[in-house]
Figure 1 (cartoon, rainbow, N blue to C red):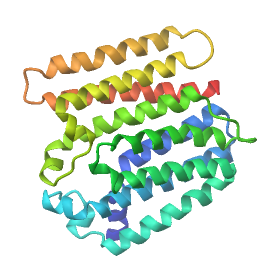
Figure 2 (figure 1 turned 60 degrees about the vertical axis):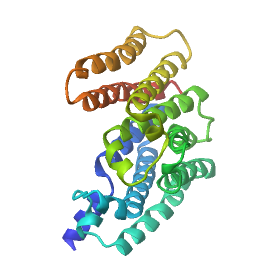
Figure 3 (figure 1 turned 45 degrees about the vertical axis):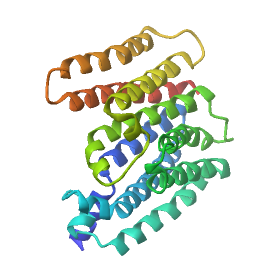
Figure 4 (figure 1 turned 180 degrees about the vertical axis):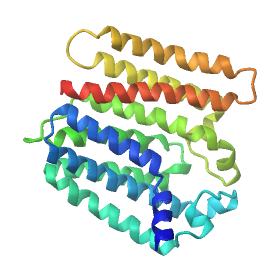
Length: 276
């Protein structure tokens, strides 16, 4: 039993699941949720992340085995596919149920984000529109958090747009380290069609656009902190490219650079929530 539970935890993609859940909880605090509201937001987002992570490992089981992914519990036999399928179904059903604590509009938005992410796992992952589910699901996150407030206020357009741009940039950054393995198993999403250089440029450009939206979107003049974030979003990818230009770790260096910009955007996203 303990091995199965541990396998389920590992199959859930625990690091990104925890990160997105924490970001959602912090954003909920920023927009003024009560303690109960923050808990409801966090549980809803966690259930959604579990459903998406488990679905991903379930769908990719054969592909992961083909490329020798020993870090995947389904591939190593720690978790059986039927168990993973049942866990995915339970987590997916829990999302709208938990989200109803914030009202029907919030529940609908949370469900949209979940469905979009599941559609990425299959069939959109290997299509030219693979970036679309990332944009929709990331954009739905702050929209859900705001709609879950009492009275279901409309989320600011700039906040949703910035999150969507962040999600789109994250898609290209997330795929960069796996381009070779994906090519061996026939995955042909938009990053694979653009190639490593095109994907790095797309990630940097989209994350810069997200930074600009988060700095210029809120009412009032942009702060010096915000303008510094924009400057960093321009400089960090360029420095990362230059630093890795003459090394074998060029892709890894560029990947880390776009992750730094993504982290800047997440911080701006969370702190911008208080302006809603």
